[in-house]
Length: 112
Image 1 (cartoon, rainbow, N blue to C red):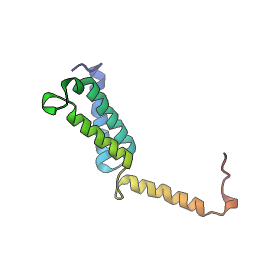
Image 2 (cartoon, rainbow, N blue to C red):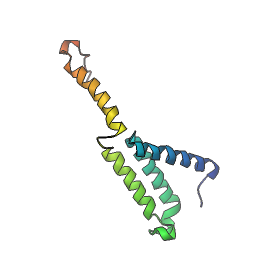
Image 3 (cartoon, helix red, strand yellow):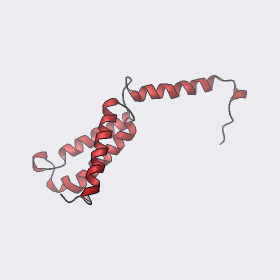
């Protein structure tokens, strides 16, 4: 297929797709997972699929482009309200809200 160092890239791509896919399914760390998966699809498209044309039946970049675009959309807009990311954000948000409710004299100064 023309992928450089296939003995190294094949296991790396397998881990990226497995971990990234699980992260997207669980809606955890969607920003990071989406960007990494979109970059992986871009590299796959450029190295292998673009020379074959657009259509998937000829080995083209159609599916790879759709998967990359979908991953990028998830990274850009995040997971939904009922996601692990939302729960994690809620905990961070609760700490921020508690800090904002403290009197100004107790807050740490903000440096410019």
